[in-house]
Length: 298
Image (cartoon, rainbow, N blue to C red; front, side):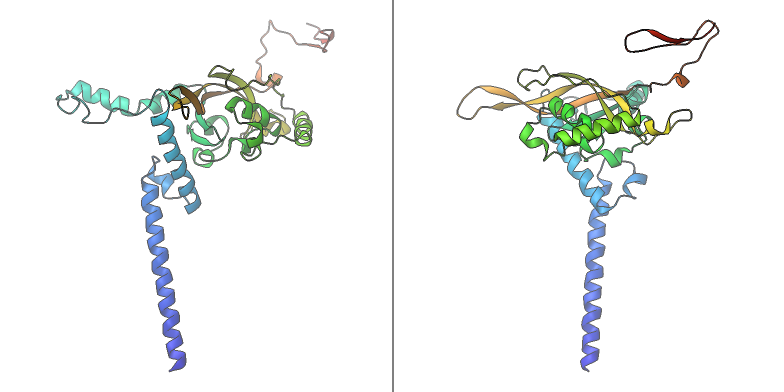
């Protein structure tokens, strides 16, 4: 009787744990279905990814609604939208506008991303896989500093306006040892190092941003040196998005930065294998003093 009672308790405990796991899995499944991603992707997500993407999506909604100007879309039924009878032409227009974002992303020669003021990707377009080989799901919610060259961490932190004492918490490497070692690593990798920019305080800088960083890339191409395939040089152009906020104890309003909205273009690698040699072209080489050190006979 004693052993039978213990077996019943164990069985009851196992059933309770199984039921609890089932309910938990169902909640995660329902939460994943609410994400603005295709079902083929959400059905393959693990629990940690579901939480990470959900938090990023909620932050992105705040980023869109509280920033100036707000990005809140016109909802169906607002104003006179629902009262106007739609013609076949307007229905076709609505169908095109529904997929307008995807059309625009495909036509851009690059990818779009939004980085919070703490240095995390709130959004990155799925076209990043074309240029870097990285997935949208992997990058969303992750720290931007995990995917850029260590020698460019300070550059990125300055552009985002992250204060020096908060950079380590955001994942930014600021120690001289890491910068020097990463600089030597970049020279070995054959990846050109962007020129450093002079630091400015966020208050003095205009909202527009334009700079070069090196981002991780998993793409390889025949003819390129194998060591140069780890990073790609990215030209980032964008704008700091701010939100209005009242100064405590005053009626004066200030603009607080929320993050960076940017378009990224990948630069071609510095290799002559990418240049098609025509019959009227010839190759010559110069040193840093612009003295010709080699020239083809033709």
